Every structure is written in C-alpha cells, then in structure tokens.
Amino acid sequence: MTLTLVTGGTGHLGRDIVDRLVGDGHHVRLLARSPGARPDVEWAVGDLATGVGLSDALQDVDTVINAATYSPIARRGGVRPVDFFRSPSAVDVEGTERLLSLCQRQSIRHFLHVSIVGLDDATLPYARVKLAGERLVRASALSWSVVRAMPFYYLLDKMITSFAWLPLWPMPTTSFNPVDTSDVADHIVACAFDGIFGERTEIGGPQDISIAELGGQYRDARGLHRKILPVPMSEAKARGMGFVISRGARGRLTWADWLQHRYSVTHQAA
Image 1 (cartoon, rainbow, N blue to C red):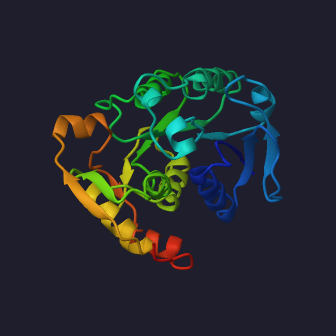
Image 2: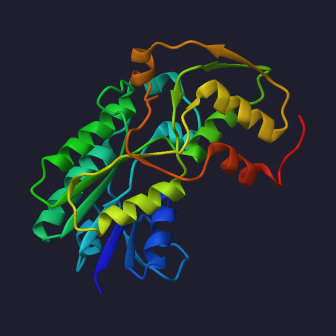
Image 3: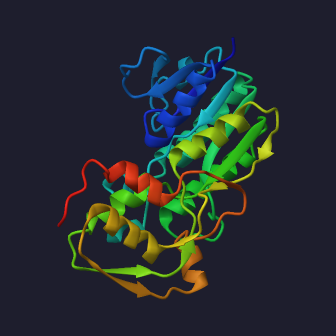
C-alpha cells in the first residue's frame, strides 16, 4: 500500500483531507509539531519552518499533499495594520523550498501543493508569500500539481465574528465565491490520485455572493440586530484583496447551509 504524507493535516482543511484519505483506504502519515490522538494515521513529528523531522517524515512516502501554511490573519481571525506590510515566510516559502528539495532526493511520485485563487493580482503580503511558495513548486523538477482554492467559510466566520459587536457593518458590494473545506478536500484528494500533473482546476463555492450579502446571512443566522452599510469597491481593489470569482470546479455546500449547521444549536438573539 502506498503512503501519503500530509503537511498541515491538523488544520481545518488538513483534517478534512485526512478524513477523505482514510475513508478511501489510503495509508496516511501526518507531519505535526507534536503527535495527535487519532489512531488511524501515522504521526511524524517535525516542523516545516525549521526542517526538523522532515527527512524522516518522507521515508517510504509516495505522495505528498502540502496543505501547510502560516497566515497570521487566519490564526487570529482578523486583520491588523501589520498585515498590510509583512507576513512570515518561514512555512510557505522556506519550508516549501526545503520540502521540495527533500522530496526530490527521495523520488516522491507526486507533490500536490494547496494554494489560493487570484494570487497573481493580490497585493496583501500573505498573498505574495503564498505566490512565492507556489512558484517554487512550479519550478520544481518533481511531478507536481497546484490546486488553488477560494477563501474558506470557517475563516470568513471568524473574521465577521471579530467585529460582530459593532452596531454598523461597512461591507463591500463586490462578489466572490468562498467555499467549504470539505468540498476543497474532496477535490484535492481526487487530484492527488488521478494521474494528472501540473496546474489543476481551481475550486470555489457553488454561489457567487457579495460580501455585504454574506454578512447579512451571517447576521440573520446569529439572530443579531445590526445594520449593514454596503460599500462600493473597484474591481482592481477587489482583486488586490483577493475577492475574485473562481472559474473552475464548484463545491456543493452553500454559505447559508454552512451557517445553518454552524449556528443551529448556538442561535441566540443579541
């Protein structure tokens, strides 16, 4: 049986990827800074940012799914002024370069890299870091694939929650199609084992929705009483912020359905 190494396997997307792999009968090894509790996978202790444990983690591996990333915005669930000036690159650039080099030495059959839709026009430092890492993959001599995905529902939920206490929510009217990690995981696992390499079809959610409408659905799902102020945004500014509409595969779960599942038990008026 072939062995698949997943980096970032303890994150939101990574957990869904691992669930799909295990459900499909794959032998899975997770790279993590400390071993977790789930018994249906192998745990390899290591760190992309430092390189510790990477060589051992790749022993006997056939396929690598690189879902690791470090986004301060995602970690804290909100944007701070510093995010417009810099973003750490130890995982997404140096870590990716280190992983690629080791994979080449160990003759990995397939290296699949998870990236983000719209990076070429995005201006935020995190996006530039992600693009730099993606370019390293594309320049590699390995048999590689790149799958770009739209922003995830759980992250948008965290970001709106961070300012949900405000009585007025200024929100752009520009549209995009965010997606759930479960749909992205299905697409990634399919791309990892279909024998096709290179740039793969990007994936977004099933619905084109304005940010203002997205905020309104969140507000209603939470039972909040807030006023939304629609704010026009130029196309260039929207693309710079990563608000685009993907043109590839479409997931199945809508934002409204995700919210219903997320808040059906915790729904409270405020």
